[in-house]
Image (tube, rainbow, N blue to C red; front, side, top):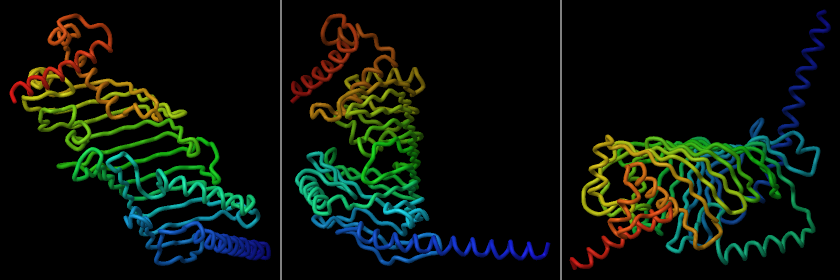
Length: 377
């Protein structure tokens, strides 16, 4: 019995030792490939081989042209699979970003810039370089499979010049993100994805949660979106053109099911505005502020509205922002009990039929207020 115990112990040591050796060489195999993939604009302080993973510290990405720093991370850990030693492909069990920060920028003409984002001529030039490189290599590119990518305690700063100058900045903190099953070259797969974070407000944090799947090749997706405890004024730059009255305070909660397929979006959902206080004077989504204030008092300063945003994201004439605001304006009129006939008669002196008629009536109210302003001048 004693001999069997000793034999079992020796076998266990050999197995553990062999496993660690294999993992070490798997990690070592990843290192040169990682350095090759990093490319221009990336810098890091050090790469170290740990027992079961590869550690890259002090990583940052600076756009070679604009010199803007779009990404930095305290540490990235790469946990390779033992199977990487047996095949030409590279399989990574887990890729973890510790305390990363992302900076994303939208220019006045709507172009997005950020880590791994290129647009316009830069994108065309990059595609030519990639296709040219593939022809030269003759299909020698390494296949990469990542079982899980996760972000721990990250942050995102989104700077938007298109809606405001100086730029408006939306800040997301305490970001935890996970996506599973990623292949390169990109393959069409339903990769499960989750995101949790905090949205910085003026007096308190709101929360955001996304859960569903995304196809990283086609960019089709199906997710649920939940926003809780977010200050309405946090999004003021996005509704300012359609809200001329001053929003003093209010909290927003929203739930939506978002489906994006072949460039077309469908996003039904509910918006709940709590403790909403508005000053008289001006309009709120084509509704006179005086009317809205009196109705809010009757409803305890709370509005529940439904929406269903639909459209072709690839159509230059389609605006997600304007479509959403129009839907909310229509829903506000219903939620506040404003009859279609009353809204229409104020401007058109007739009874409106259906959603199209109501929207036209609300827009006519907006035009009426514009005319009044011009008369005062």
